[in-house]
Amino acid sequence: MPRPERPSDADYYERDRVELVSQGDLFRDVPLAYPMPADELLVDEASGGRRFLTGPLAFGPAMLITPSCSVGAQGAAGYGHPVRTLVPVIPLAQLIDQGVVKETALADLRRFDHLINYMYLPPLDINELDFSMPESAALLYMPVTLHHAFLEGQRVSQLAYRGAQQLQRKLVWFYSGWLEDNLDAFDPPMD
Image (cartoon, rainbow, N blue to C red):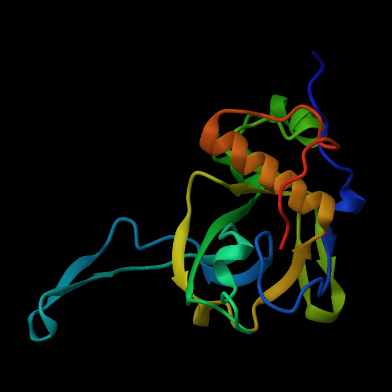
């Protein structure tokens, strides 16, 4: 059976598809991970022993993977809770330089998006927001959970229907090991 191809670059992004944040939204300047390794673990005894990691944080683009139905309030307008899960979006050139992705895999990654732990993202340029992202990969294996306040005013784009469909397909593959071969037959719930 032939490998399923990913959607074309032109089918990945659109602006302002829905007002509320939704799965597949791209954000700039958000924390990409927790401090690793932490400089220090602080324990606040006055507040019952809450613990805090201190250390440098890397900021950059990230993609929301929290399901849209989980974000919206049930039976009311707005958001149901402030918890968001995102995955870092890293330029492919950086992943190749670090030896994470092999240069020999690039042609297949661009055509098939065939690596289970990553989602290929074509370049994105939004002049009015002064935002540019080279071809990149969303690191599906490295989620970070943040409060919604980190995302306010940072959304730069949303995945268009085919891009969101590809994200759903990749998440199903990543979490279950099952890959739908026919993207046209794959009809996950959207928004």
